[in-house]
Amino acid sequence: MRPCNDSVKAAARRLGIPAVSSYHTDFSRYAEAYKVRAIRTVVERFIGRHHRRSHRVYTPSLAARTDLLRLGVREVEVWGSDALRAALGMGSRFTFLHVGRLAPEKRPERVIEAYRVACTMVPKGVIHLVIAGTGPREAALRAGAPTGVTFLGVLDRQSRLPDLYANADAFVFTSVTETLGLVVLEAMASGLPVVAVPAGGVADHLRDGRNGMACREGDVEGMARAMVTLASEWEFRQHLARGARRTAEGLSWETELDRLDLSYREVLARAAQLSSGNQQVTVVPVPRSLSA
Image 1 (cartoon, rainbow, N blue to C red):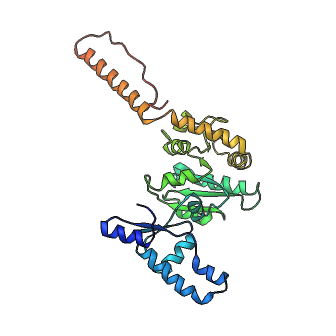
Image 2 (image 1 turned 120 degrees about the vertical axis):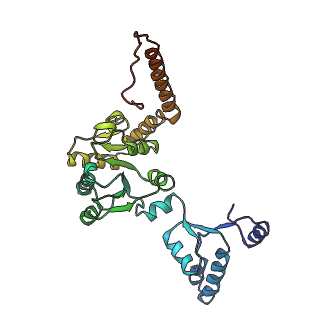
Image 3 (image 1 turned 30 degrees about the vertical axis):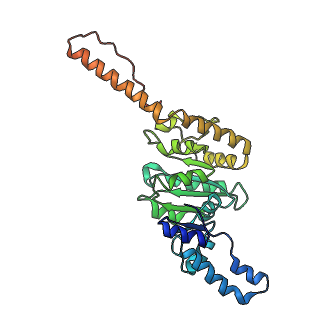
């Protein structure tokens, strides 16, 4: 599929091929700018008719999407990195992302408190916090959150979360109960420096000064200082981003499945030796975790 004009759309209809279009110039408002306001309605009708023939229309902002919906166009998608950042209220602000269940054991309130403290250390409007996920603490967290915190609720892990990771600037996490910390690895795979507590499974991957910044459990002010450092020191942040990506690249599914295959083979060999009555079994140490 490709964005197309009316003649191409007509050909696409004859061939049964879906056609899409893009809307990124508001010609109807140009009519006013060039002192020909009388033709604005005509131009709007043309724009609406043109895009209603598309299976989907792509546009770079929520404002443009609203204009098209007003003209009767129904399938409109805000598309593009800048568009997504605008839709999430990020704009040009340095955006921290937190993904996880909003429950007591995850301690999301400490993320919000660290953000609140960090806001006092930088000029107004410099940083932003986006929280994805839901849970029993969501209502209370929303009610007590300062200005500049966006709650997104549950997002589809396959279609929405990757875009969110890709558009954030850093990842912040306070849970100390993780057996793996998958969201931390997902963030690193997107090249996001991570601010977190090196506890549980997170400790296996977080390397202070190499792929993120480690904070002591409960040290809200320390986490806030780390957030300010990432938002203000570009070169250091880029260094951590590269380290985060390298960490994730070393944990590919191919590598992990090869390790799992080896572990299964060791289990089978051990079982075969025991069943044959051979008590001199060679025990091969198994890694503490497959991603250690």
